Image (cartoon, rainbow, N blue to C red; front, top):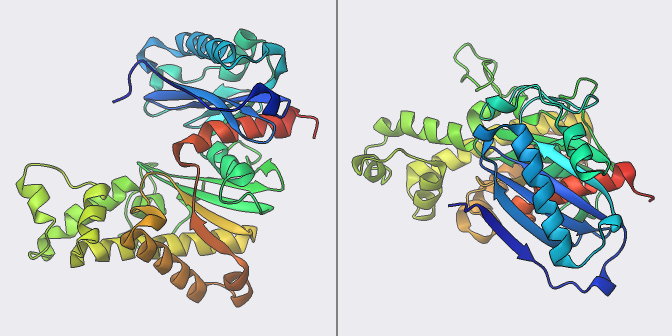
Length: 347
């Protein structure tokens, strides 16, 4: 459980810091991660505070400024060395206006000009970006995609977010809704699953943690031998983590769900790759079925790669990397700092 404040400093000497310095802010419904990052993308310190979204955005901005001030003091750097701030937020937004629009889990923050509020409180320029695009930029800058010029990232979590980075530029779109990769259509049938956005057949409706849990629960009665019945009998709801754990134990139904999820992702990735032609597609977020360190995660990734190769042009199959993210939950604030660096830095 997140306490009021979780802080960590890193053993980086001030003399080793590559100036200028940037700060990244990753706003979530429960917690806000704030980090100080140097020009090479090294994290000097970060702190995670509770969002307390019920107190409203003005209170959130005040505590962001307070937290950042404390981090600067604790890291023994000069406030003037911070060139700019990067701010990543969930929900829909108007990026040119610096405004939050609709946040499903933070309704009291709707229609708030958060970029200017943070800039005024901290007296620094602020780059404003969607949280999934920020995570993608983190992986592009210093993560799995660091050696590549063009990256697509899918964040597999409660929902399914996405980010597209092309040569240092986050693809935000003309109306601030670019890179909404989770809403690529993977099923056009009349019976296609309903996405949380209210439309049918979107990749998020099949490959998010929420949808994996729903698909598993709905199909479970048809597999009476599955060990997943034990979860239901214990009075709990099936989660995507349960699917992973039972797949690791070689439960046939759990393994089938993992493969089906990989199938839907491969279909969506194929459409995205045919549109963007990236160097690499990165899979991040909490629902990676254990990632590259587990048998299930390796099978999951292998099936995505295999089906993608069958669905796409041979030249794209040969030249497109598909791999797991490496920065974990830090990618958001690191990437937000990177976007600020790209927008305001002297590179």
